[in-house]
Image 1 (tube, one colour):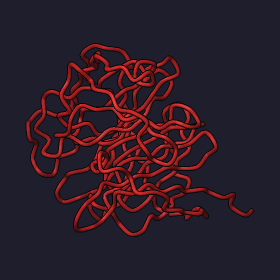
Image 2 (tube, rainbow, N blue to C red):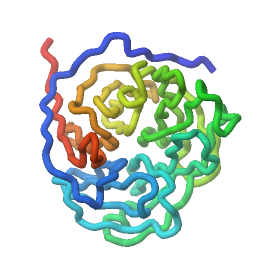
Image 3 (cartoon, rainbow, N blue to C red):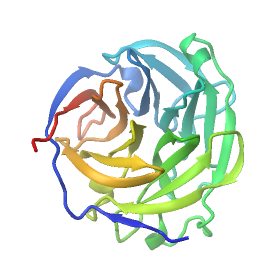
Image 4 (cartoon, rainbow, N blue to C red):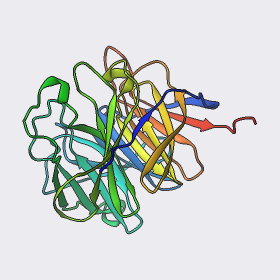
Length: 280
């Protein structure tokens, strides 16, 4: 299969208004993903090592309630998405060291979560067929992932580059959105930048209205996204650089971003980005 390479050679800065709104609750100090399920509700989760809790939030980031996934640990939950059939998907695929052999996505009932009921998950287990060694050599550490979104009956994964030297490759994989054991299908890769993983690696994703929104620690990168193919359109720089880990696009087009709370770099906030039309 021919692999298309998308290089962000010409960067277009989209005009936008960025508003830092509220401080997130301490219960979400390690927020790692969130998603809109209607125009007034976000659903969020924390990073790996925390309790296997799912949080239902109001638009201001306050917690409405939280529930437990009763049959799974939070090994390294990194992102969350939803489909149109009443399911949530939690990506337990964080893999900083590229050593994990138990990658999976949890599929749970959205209705039960909204009704404040604990849930049991069904599991989509997977591996990357290109990975032969655990860990691979430093130059081949492409098997971490923190970004996922549902699109056309599939789950799309956007990997986080850990290669040394850093080359900025973000591989795009697809998986069926149904329980089972699979080999992830590699589609192509993008180059998000070649500086370092702190600035040029994907940490969260959302696909809405045929647009892909990829988050890094310092910007939102917007692509057109049709038939599973991403084409760069623009980006919005987010300063200061903090550990931004969650992105969700509201039905009105506003982009909601959250960062983890860290002693050194700060964070623990939610931000709302309102893109404006580019002048012709």
